[in-house]
Amino acid sequence: MNDLAHRETSGRDALEDILKQSFMRGQWQNEAARASGAAGVEEVEKGVFGPKPGGAAWLWPWTMVRGLLDRSIEAVPQSYTSRRSLLFNNPGLPKGTTTSINMGIQLIRAGELAWAHRHSISALRFVISGNSALYTVVNGQKCPMADYDLILTPAWSWHDHHNEAAKNAIWLDVLDGPTVNALNQVFFENFGPEQQPLGNAAGETLALLQPPGNVLSARAPDRQMCFPWRDVEPKLLAAAKGPGSPFDGATLEYVDPATGASVLPALSCWAQLLRPGEATKSHRHTSSAVYFVVRGQGQTIVDGKALDWRPNDCFAVPNWSWHEHRNLSNTMDAVLFSVNDIPLIRFLGLYREEPEISLSPIPADSDGHFLRAP
Image (cartoon, rainbow, N blue to C red; front, side, top):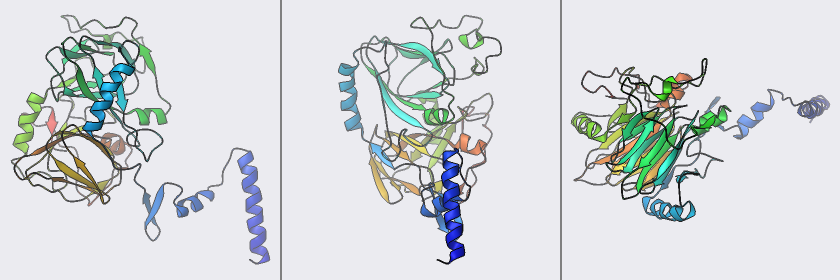
């Protein structure tokens, strides 16, 4: 190293030490981090950098989860003080199932009430084992919970869960917690009484009873919070008669029938069908996703890693990971329910997909109302 270069390096090191002590940082320091991969990006071609997948592709088998749910009954004998929910932590992340999504499975015992509260984190419930006496109340709106029904609890919505049957009930929880936590926007409030009242005949609900100027007020109280599977499945089977997507099979997105938008601001819900023997093409996108297997047996290959799935299994596909799906049965279809963060990534103007295909919004048709092709 010549004398000029030595003085430059010494001077930079000294300045960086001073900057660190002053809680500052030189932008040039990011260049070295990017080149080394420490900044969470990698060089995809000379001079072009892209994100590394956020976390690992991972599967939580139902055979394991079901046994842990049974143990949770003993560990948390009643749900008045704690939710009996098992959250899935991605082994490639400090916290969360993906960088922006939390997924878990919750059990409520026969005769239990899970107390009313609200929070700034948006959540949804996809029912695994429901019954005619299981329901969630969202801002005074009673939402029955039969198998594979979808229930929304948007940010700052009062919600409590009731199981008035003689058997335990189980559902999938999906939340945008990592995003809300990263923005330091977590608010939480207990209702007070264990349960909220149902809306009256005039349609008034607790969503209307907010303090003036409350920036956390929930969306319109009359919006659709429950999407019964009995309405979804026929639409999905009809979509399977068409060509579908070469990357995802026959796929429909749940939407707000009043606006045509995704059901939650940061999360989109899809129902996906793979026909017997169907194998999709590989693609990747800047959004991440979590999956629940409704029925069938198949395989999802993520960056060369095979995730073999069966009914009730859950798995995560990180953002910017090459992935493809395969139905391993030649006689039966396979159905997946998934949640992704496409609405959030699109809002930020950061959605990208390879190979490039259009995922621009398609207006809800007059027949589907609450479903559309993504």
